[in-house]
Image 1 (spheres, rainbow, N blue to C red):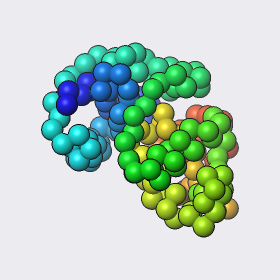
Image 2: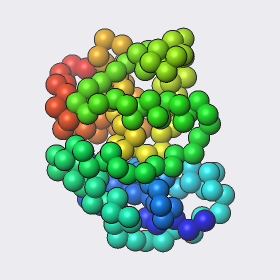
Image 3: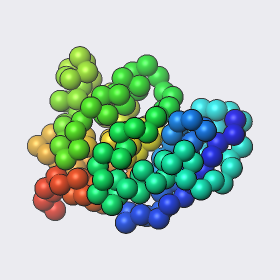
Image 4: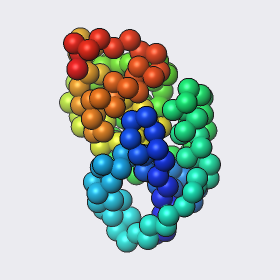
Length: 171
């Protein structure tokens, strides 16, 4: 499987963007690139990474989001893979509006699985397309920042970037 890979600079570190030529299939931070590549190998088995600049315009759209254009991500087609439950959670994440947060329990209830907060948290942690599938908008009970595969500092930056007031005592 040929995968197009771009790396862009951002205020929260270098971001790796992976496309299959039609869809965004991975977005992670460069300091987690080895984890990202391992997951891509598990998903596609044999991959051929090809360095590319701005595949399908995805890098430009992600850069626009980071510069404050919160609508720029909505038209990016994603192909995240995953189990049926993971896909349900990741689709649910995409319904959380910019500038808002939900708890894991609230998301589980919204998905019709009110007792599955932990499972929602696990699926959230395995989201292969950070930022575009906005797992950073899910927080713990009592508005506590918890769990973000890219690091809590990045989660806090993304939420503040979207206008969510974050008290440092939450981190």
